[in-house]
Length: 273
Image (cartoon, rainbow, N blue to C red; front, side, top):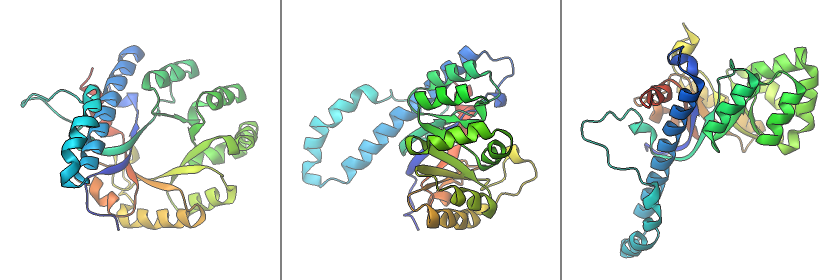
């Protein structure tokens, strides 16, 4: 069991424009996303180096402050006003950050434009892809792609050309997926994906995105993670579904590498609009 600590190894931000105003422009949304992501990146760097400093022997911390920390000045955010809202406060202490662009309802060109506004943290979602040409564009841009198990099944049965093309690039891409149950694990293990990096295990807690689902709970999520790691020892588990500041630590205590946030991240994005 992981040490009881608020530090998140990997923070995954999930975009969902539909949670905001329907009439919001893509330009405004992209700019707000960029600001929110930049904010969390900067705080994450600051917290990482603060942690590194605290692990140093006391007698060399002063030298550390005068040399290494001075280089972080440009990434340190200004102190917040005492009366300012800080909706992202609990998400700041992380080691690495990714942004899964889930706005797959957009036309493909607009989806790419939004991903460009996100920047280097972006993870492309396979659901945005409907043709082989689009798949090749994504693969040439960024080899990290999220393929949920239900989408894999759909490609296998309905879009075989896409599935064959993706398989041909298995050695060149880094794949993510989503696990809900043992059937999903059986599917992933049957594929022998060379570079399966993260699996999002969902839904851990009740969430409005899955109305009426009670959530599988952290203990059940841990068992699914252990099953997938038996076949993919290096895969990392990300807890998804109903994650917020009062329950995320439960996930970190059950061997999850990190957590994925959508609703609370969209609230933080909304504050930048």
